[in-house]
Length: 502
Image (cartoon, rainbow, N blue to C red; front, top):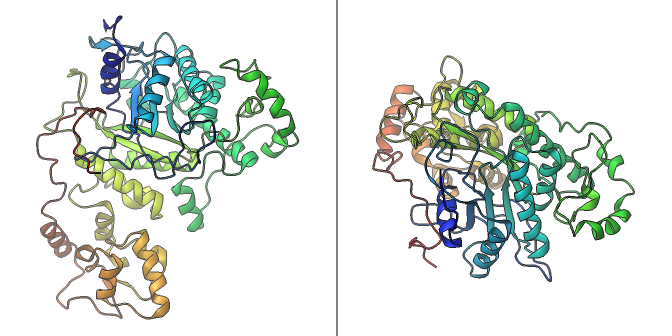
């Protein structure tokens, strides 16, 4: 390792912001919080990722690692312990200073903080908790914070971080336990899923106590509720959340006086609840109010798209995640034990997985509808909804003037907004193709799968798989334009000329 022992703050920032570039879990906050007198910053539900560079990347979060030192030797990671790369570690005070000074200069709206592991998971998580505590208490920062939890850290530290962060995430890393054992032998499914379950249960308890101030439900949850499907409930064990918190609010003010002088509250009694420290914390934000997410690396191991989507669906169902992110595998270590990447990383495959993920979360599709064991991969030249429709032509054409909302969502070219507009517009009369175009339906895809008043848009159109496929590909010659060009993986810095127009 090449340690930068006397590095300046700017040198550390260059090293640790660049080291964070492979973590793709940057999203809008999903939580609304107004500014407070005596505090700095606020959060807007859709206000974190509003600034984009010319190549489409969001740069409105200060996205850094606390340290790129690591005791683990994950084969895919540039920061693994056997690599000779420049190493640096922030102090909690340095992270706080950077966040506040960048915020005051209007460079950022929040902090995205991840980390390698130094000494032990608990030691690293304690430093992260110290950083979050100082930001909220000493610096009075009221803006958005996304914190990565360290797998293997104690439940007390995970909970402490959850009271100060808006969103937390724990990277699943690889879709299957087999792949994780092969590529990241120092990690296990248990050390990843245990804190994920703890955060889920904590959010459910927080909602019971504080209403929506704690882990607002995911889009997947609302979609399943709309379609009438049941989901496994949050596994809150022991005392019920309502009984746990009943009658205890009066004691919180006194408890808060003693906690402001320390990072961690005194040792708590043994309990099966996920929130044993709630009465020592400021509950105005709730516990992880923006929910939790995770990330999987795609292409490092041999899992099929079907396996990936099945794991994704299980995560949404059983852990109520807000998002699952997919990161195309980049062989940054050129390790012989890693799969050889022929040309560019599998970015097109990554893109199709994101599209399929939207179908799970917003459109009511199931993983076993999109793919099967006999057909385990997406056609990367067609979006997953078109791919599904071509495999299920018996459901088409759909009559626009009579189909229900969920049936409309299955039509390629019709999204959630346009489906809602169609249902609303039908209340005043029947719709024709001109009206659909005005509503926002993507006609170049939809015309093969719909009728208006029993008629196709053109008489020569045929409901035939080969015919539709040829026409869809002919009309989309620029599908995934740019993915065949030379791609670089340089992390944008806050000081780059990003080509953003005011």
